[in-house]
Image (tube, rainbow, N blue to C red; front, side):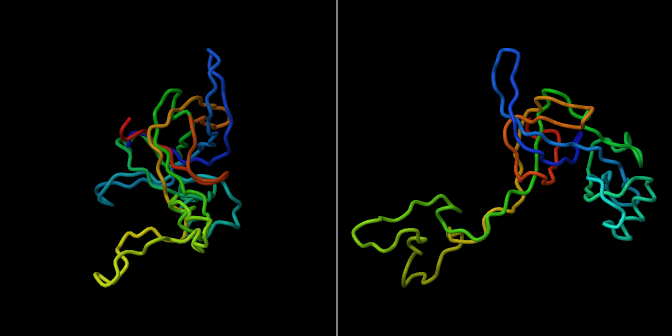
Length: 209
């Protein structure tokens, strides 16, 4: 990837263009992300930079993390992630990656964890239709046919059934950066992104853009 940053979802709002068009946007607090560690081909087998995000109090950081942050001369943070960038030599330990990494009009991919919905049925989880509500069917929100009987005498793999819905990693591709607020480290992204308010997001340049 060419450039990337960690961010936190703030919420959604809307902005107006010069011609009066309304654009729904997601507000993301992007950075600052201090570079904590650099990996090299000679020592680690690949090149990457390890960055941190979301400052926390000292008592919330464990000893191994404290050692890394102290060595880099950076404050303690809640999250840490590796970026395998095309040119890692442009970054130095202690340097901060900020929202101005991206510019208005850039196309990005955003990865986050969706909201957890707990244990749900097939109607909510898989968008299945309910059964007939009249004539005594007594089968309204069930999973439906479970497949063959005597042959092969089992439920086929991949059958849509009830289960844990949400709380999974999802990437939304080709989203447009509508506005960049450098002073407040905010990115305004066109459309919706995964996750609830306050959840961690990984923003990078678009792979297919």
